[in-house]
Amino acid sequence: MKITFLVPSAYGMRGDVRATLNLAGQLADHHEVEVVSVKRTRQSPFFPVDPRVTMRWLVDATPGARRSLLPGEQVRAEVAVWRMLRRLRADVLITVRPALSVQAARYAPKGVIRIAREWSRPSVPGPVRRYYPRLDAVVTHTERCRDEWAAVLGRDAPLHVIPDPLPPAPWPRSRMDNRIVSSGGRLVPGKAYDRLVRAFAIVADKRPDWRLRLYGTGPEERRLRALVCDLGLHNHVYFMGTTPDLPGEFAKASIVAVPSKQEVLGMAVLEALSCGVPVVGFDGPRGPAGFLRPGEDSLLVPEGENEIEGYAAAILTLIDDERRRMSLAAGALRSAAAHAAPVVAGRWRELMGALTA
Image (tube, rainbow, N blue to C red; front, side, top):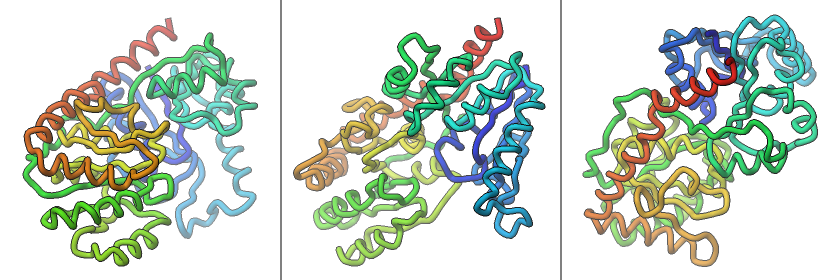
């Protein structure tokens, strides 16, 4: 069976890119797999790609490219996608993001099984309602996400829930003996790293031998650095930059903090669990709760009044209670097992087999 993934860009540092490449690599055990990137934004992908997976791109958007994506060049990208779909020779097409799934529904050959892989509710539901009924399946990564899509497409839509896969095992394992709290992801407003920095000011005051490491870059970095300076945390909070091996860095920590207001993708959460590191997050309506088992692999703090103090208290609880920290670490490994690449790929093979039958 030949499986084609169509993604906006397979070259960036995003959770959906990481999840897609993990899945493609595992499916390559039994199938011919290719990943088609609409745009190439750098010379090589940020995350590692299994050598058995064929990579190709449609539009070169790397810096300095002769035909980089300028205003109006989006039309060229859409034409490139249309041509690629019309010429597609594959058994299964898996599209990432609603814009590409709509295109697949409209233009992919009828003999191809068409599956949309979704992580969040569409911002423009009109085209989705019109064209998604032509697809063979819509696969979400959590039950909550499936409910959101059911509200758009109806309860009778072919909706399925398959979690995201982790990188292939063996996973790095934390020894839980470093006095480090880590956090990773894009430094954007929705990740709310300012809440974490303010909470860690309380932690550092009570436990000055602990350190916070922030992995990632983004538009919030300058503001966060200024906040660290204002709070006098320059010896306690470190900006570590980007890394393609976030699990390897999380394995150096004893706690992983997830302060997000919205944790749509959850790959950083899953990678923390795979290292056997407990997670501390906020219990918001779109926070990390969908990926966790609070009390077994994590601690969640209510949002709202006194949330900074509550978050600091949760971190201090795990710092001071080694027995509880180790218990949650063991639970984290049990939670991660459901996201092992062979387990997740097996569920995808079952779905594709049923659809082709």
